[in-house]
Image: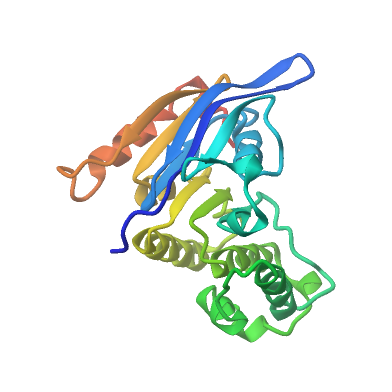
Length: 248
């Protein structure tokens, strides 16, 4: 297994929209070689937190640090160490799958960042046969696979995935679970949310519960739990209260 890479840290993140406070001094640390799941009711602030962590939104208060450096002050080269996949795939409908990946690769190359070859990235997510099809003709599930393929092709140190299992069929979910395990072994730090609680409990090393704008609970996978059953039950209990029941 690769040596752990520099973690992403968030300290005291707070965000307000009008009179509504969405995040309240959230602290979070992602270590290399781990998968962290995030659960919470709709409107709990998961997407807002992801947007701040990925640099798409500035927090009202708090900071993000990568390797001890403030992310807001990082160069474009260091920003290339992040990859974010939004809940709804952000892909170009008027381009082919291959062109979508080559466009992203070109942008990364401009700052000296390497990317997996497009054909290899597409094959990894089962999209080889659709490489030259216009994305506008893709199903929601295929568009999701493409968005994931583009993010994972960047081989980033930090992956932030908002509902990555959405719209994937059973085969696609199993494939993504395998790829997540591979990325963890590579040393990536991965944060993801999912309403598929069983799958999240299967792939994650830790699960955090966001409620009322704060991290209200956490469960960890233990070395003395080889089949993960105790972790799975603890994770299910974490979101089985009123806030968890509101998810969906």
